[in-house]
Length: 100
Length: 100
Length: 100
Image (cartoon, rainbow over all chains, first blue to last red; front, side):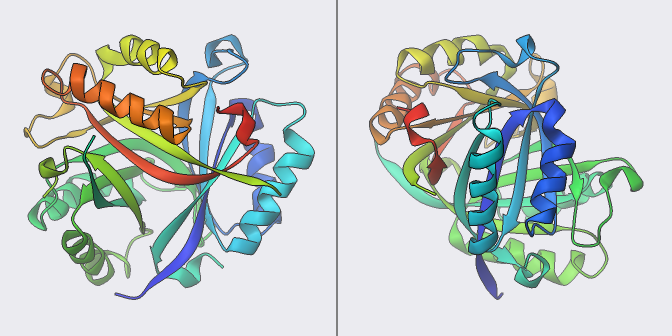
């Protein structure tokens, strides 16, 4: 089984940002994404239930270069105004060509 | 705290595959699994909502050998016909004997 | 983009433990958390549907020291009595100061 090393970028954000986030990560090079509904509390101490709707947990597997672009974009556009968190992990992926 | 290094295998697939996937990974050696409902878009550009129902995100913590067996099985049986993605991460687990 | 290396602790537990787990991880140093609803089967062979309600999948990004404290606490307080699993991954985080 040939595995390819790629980056898993996970973004947790308020639910109303879903469409905008999806549009942005695709423009920056993501070929796909998975979203689950979530709830939680961040460093501001605000529960999701106090916001407009709940949170989303968006995952996308991308090349290191696209991961960097996505994180830079989040930092520039989202972090000042929204309760967004983002983290990156190394993953081994089957069918690596689907993602780049 | 004694931690054991194992593999976290994550499979994202169309929801109607849940029973079949669970049966397969258990037969291949997985001792447990966790499923969350998901939605998304893959490299085929197909949103989950256009399929029969939504997606699932299935996680299982297994030994490296079982991870290899699961990935090989997915490649042989699922990848040609279904919009399945799979990736593997290294995790440190408490109570490692539960998983192998 | 400055990334900080931290620990992602994931806890999967029966849903009725949510409030207690959240209270405990915050007391032990977690600054935030994300929860998704889940279902599954563990090494006891018990499906979530046979319990009181379903499972939760709780994630929190913390320092290595807080991760250690959380795992020790889970081992001491939860593992004997509840179907809890926990695992740790290395993650690269944007805005690392939010988590410690």
